[in-house]
Length: 142
Image (cartoon, helix red, strand yellow):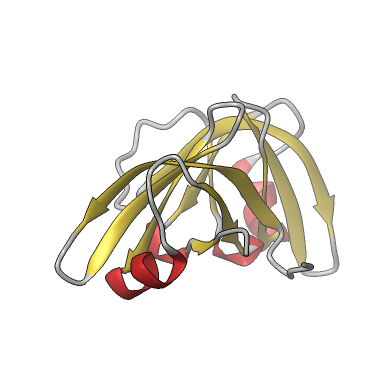
């Protein structure tokens, strides 16, 4: 299957917390990087989600926010993925910022060129990818 989402976290479901309407699902990659998704209980049932099951978490690059540095700020975004800038590809209006996480996963964010410049993003600089759990789409093998 081909998909337009730039970020694909292939892994295993390591936690699943059921709620009245939604569930919180944690997917952990083989390298140990973790991403949390909020999905409906209907999706849990229809996809047959369970701890130990393989799953992919998909996130479109424009949904990823970037914070320069090591943190020091609290955010409501459930996924705060620290790493280092692997590369910045500048376009006419936007830049594609690639952040390498500790476990090796590469996260892409599309931000304005102005923001990339203001944040001082360059290879090797510490950065954090911020992703709301509600912006994560889950998929399982058929």
